Length: 434
Image (cartoon, rainbow, N blue to C red):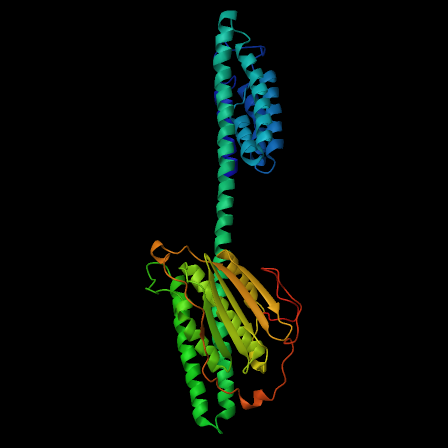
């Protein structure tokens, strides 16, 4: 309804302002016979429907209105101006720049006929001056219609790009949250399942050991809730966000290692080179790399496996290498919890911070994961510090695996796997999906 009302107003303004109904008597031109105003109004009515139609077919509507402009000008002395301008604006705002430029040039030609009609009956002295004046006004109006149309078209493009960037930002944030939830929940639940399963099996024969396993489950649950609370606080608006502190990083690696050891996996931590400062995002990523790798050792290697975690500092690079010997007994409940998205999310996280990930199945059994992360340059007062010697963290005596699990044969997928050396590639067929 609004489009029809606007079209009626534009056509009525054309009839009143730019026709024989209100023209100066000296502009009689070549239309010598007087035309009834009713005829002029009826001849202009089709332009109303065309103006509404221009929103669906801009170029076709502009062509129809331009032809009608010529016919009315030469036939009855009505010289529409606003309707062709509206059609020209629509073409400019909804079509490409070459199409808009062609329509503008053609509209100038149509209005040139209108100018000729205006100045035809004038004396030679006035003809040039009035022609330049009227033609200049029409050219300015037509050009303004095209410029406004192009500005509106550009605004639409900018709005679409802004919307696309918002969608991309939302998608990236969803992926980040999904990775965080996976890293927090997958490791903790795996450890808790193994500990609770072992406690259930030895609850009667060794209540003390079962109690220790349940206390480990409780500790892991408390730490997991703290991490989930930190993640949920990040999702709140700034006005509601509490102080969450720094997320997990390499400084909390010892706690992670202890959790894995309580699940029956021996872990040896080695570090070489001079540590360099890490950005918070890189520090969290380094922690998640070790966490994901050790979680996969628990799932696919099981109690009795031995894992080695290597942190190798070299200038502005930190190389993290986590491998296991594949000598454990996999827990079937733990293996069934794999989502297959762990390594995929880890690659995305590493790529975001500018690192690389390489995974490889070892011929002698086991698996190796190597991540290379960027480290910040050492501050000036650290330049003279001597390089730290390689150090190792020897594991304490690990808890024995549950009795029923110890007799289970190694699960499928723990044999020799095809190599996947391409950084950022998909895990090999039958390999560890997390």
